[in-house]
Structures are given as structure tokens and as C-alpha cells.
Image (cartoon, rainbow, N blue to C red):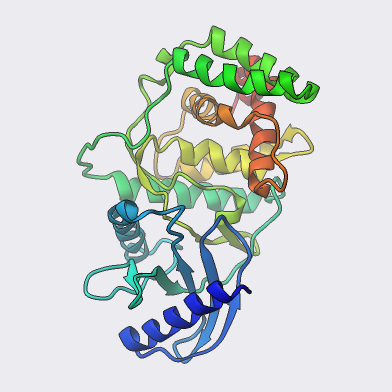
Length: 324
């Protein structure tokens, strides 16, 4: 642990004691995620989890958005969904040390992460059920808001693609060039009007295997709600499906069926919406098909693989998923 990380840890632990009377007996750093510092804590209040918000990843002007996201997390917890219980102080979930280090404190959830593509049928069923219920709780009696992220136009997609293609050809990266040429054919032939009927509402927006904990054959917790926002909730359908059910370059259809069956307990999910969800995530994440950087963020490698699989199967999604 760096001296800076140790200083931040000690300051946060002192703040936790001051605000909540919690005495920490052990703090184990978690080297996972991007930029934010994280620790598992043993304390006289049981096992806890604390995350410091990086000033680079989350500049000060994003704090209000974090408060909104965490407020929804707390609401889901109160409704009985498997999400971590948060601590708040003076009405705030984003807490501050004397030097203005921002952090969030919550109960540590049990459960474990799984490897990408390795979910069981029963795990996928319970995951679909939890996601469907989450969407129902978040989006009942909804007040419409401006979208946090809107769909890129075809022109914007082409402009973004050209930059990545130029880089790939300049570096003679044949694998990336081939993937980008396939991507361009899809972009050129795309009718973005298929997204016009996408429902708008609150969604987690980051449901991949690192943010889902399982306990045997059930979901123990959905975690990391920092990116929750008013978007297209359909992202929360295709993102976990690709993350949890795509294995050895094959989408495991029994897992997809299980997820969809669980989701349909709470919200309609016709085949047309399922396919649109996959294409929506592909459109949003297309920019990740690029020449890999050294020491790349590990999930990005997987996201790139998932995006390429969708591109390779773009014209057969309807046949592949028929009957689900």
C-alpha cells in the first residue's frame, strides 16, 4: 500500500469512528476496480466495506449525482432487495474526512464473484428476478428526466470509428482492423430507429460479473450503484446476460432463458425487446473495439470480446434467440 493510500485509509477510519462510533480492528485493501480505493473492514459493528472516491474518476461536481445514485440504492435496500445497507451522516451518503476525502460506508455483503460466462441456470434465474424487481421498484410512478446518456447518431458513430480505424491501421494491428471492418458494416447498415421505443428510467448501468455477488444458486447482492442513472434500463438486461452467459464464444441459451423467465415475473420482456437490448449495448460499447493498451483494465478486455461476439452474430440474433 502506498503512503498516500495509507494516509487516506487512516483518515477515513478516524472519520468513521467520529461519525458512527465504529471501531475498526482490521482494514484489508481490495485491489479491484478503477482508481477508487477500497477496504474490507472488521469492526465492532460487524464486517463493513468502505470506498474512497478518486478525485480523478469522480471530480467534485459529480458528488450530487453520487448522492442521487446512493439514495436509490438505499431505497432498494429498504424494499428488501439484495443490495448493501448504507451508512448516512446528516442526510448524506457521500461522507467526508477533515481534508475532504470523500467516501461511502456500507455493510459488507457475503457472497462471491464468479468468472465471466460461468453462471448456472439457477443463478441466472434469480439474477433475472432481482433485476426485474429492481426495475419495477425504481421505475414505478416515474417522473421523467433528461437522459444521462443518449444514443449516438450514425454520423457520430462513423466519426468515432474512423479515429479507431486509423490508429489500428497505423499500428498494423490486423485483428483490430478486421473487427473494426465488421463493425463498420453494421454501423453503415444500422437503422437507429429501432431504439425509438426503448423505455426510459433508472438503471444500474454497470451490471457485469464484478458487480454481482452470488451465494450458491442465488444472488447475494448487486453492488456498486455509483453509475445508476436515468437512462435506458435495457442496459441492465443485455449487460449481465453477455457477462454471465457468454462462454467459449457461445451464448448459453439455457442461461438466457432462465434470466428472461426470472425477469418476466416483474416486467414484460418480449423477444423484440431482448434483441433490441443486446443491440443497444453493442451500439453504446462499440468504441471499445480499439487497439489494446498496455496493462489494460481487465473487464475492458472482456467487454471487447462480448462486443465482437454480438457483431459476429448480429444477423442471426433473431434465429439464435427464437423461442425465448
